Length: 76
Image (tube, rainbow, N blue to C red):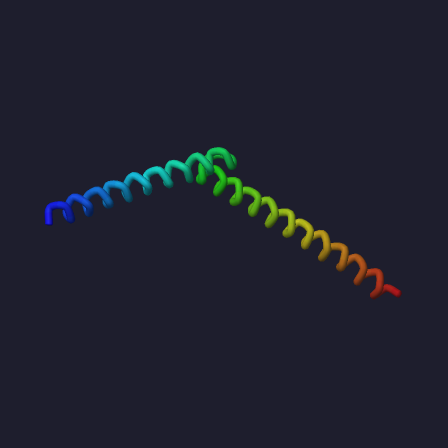
C-alpha cells in the first residue's frame, strides 16, 4: 500500500519535471527561431497591414486605369 503511494507520487513529480523541461525547450526554440512569440505575432500583423495597403493601392490604380480606358473607348 505504501509502496503504491510512493510510486504515484514519484510519477507525478516526474511528469511535472518533464512538462517543465518541454516548456523550456519550446521557449528556447522560439528564441532561436526569431525572438519571442509576441514579436513574431507583431511581425505577422505588420506584414498583413502592409499587404492590405498595397492591394488597396493596386486596386485604386486599376480602377483609375479602367476609368481612363472607358473614357477613351466612349469617345471612339
